[in-house]
Image 1 (spheres, rainbow, N blue to C red):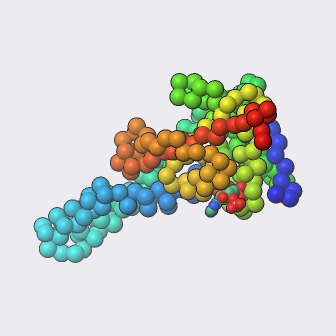
Image 2: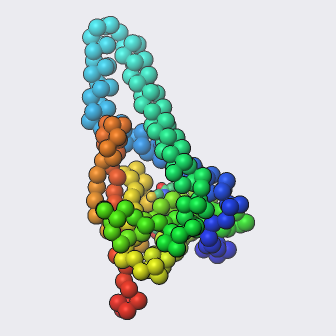
Length: 226
Ligand SMILES: CC(C)(COP(=O)(O)OP(=O)(O)OC[C@H]1O[C@@H](n2cnc3c(N)ncnc32)[C@H](O)[C@@H]1OP(=O)(O)O)[C@@H](O)C(=O)NCCC(=O)NCCS
């Protein structure tokens, strides 16, 4: 963590923040594709296509070509879904970080700066009051690959926890997914408890059995510290 400084987002950081976010999300494409291949439905479709074409054409070439085509299509679909998620995130908050996070006292966006550039990001804002009343939600956690395993994400987690406690909220909640295994380890390391597992309602998520996890960190008030 030497030479890493965590500070509030400034408008000049906009492009770097988007770059860190895009890299962090795009790296999950291969693991999501592998996750899709492990699903029984995917394996059944591939197997049935192979066997049906093998029986009808009495040749190996057509079924192999068909399965290759299906695999390429599946991979492109995963890329498309990630790009769509990135696009949605830009429209939701990353194109307007100051307006979304810096105009209310209960939300904030931070960057970790190292070697003169943004190497990590995190944000928080009030969580959905129906599902997580009295909580802030941690979002947009990402660290550049070149700066991983240096404790930057841990420091960003602590920044969010301190902010949440200072604002009088009881807990931090967040969502992550089945393929974000480093993030799961990070949050568990930081004391977060997994409180819910669910598959997103979109058809693509159901087909891929793309499970989301909700984590929660209950905070001690100052007087409760031991
Ligand atoms: C998850 C992520 C933010 C972790 O960033 P990081 O700065 O490397 O994390 P830290 O160095 O602070 O590590 C904190 C702890 O997390 C766990 N951890 C993080 N990466 C890990 C890995 N590759 N393998 C095993 N444990 C890991 C460890 O417990 C680690 O503590 P330790 O180093 O003392 O063992 C980073 O991998 C990332 O940006 N991933 C892509 C974007 C993403 O998925 N974001 C999460 C959105 S919910």
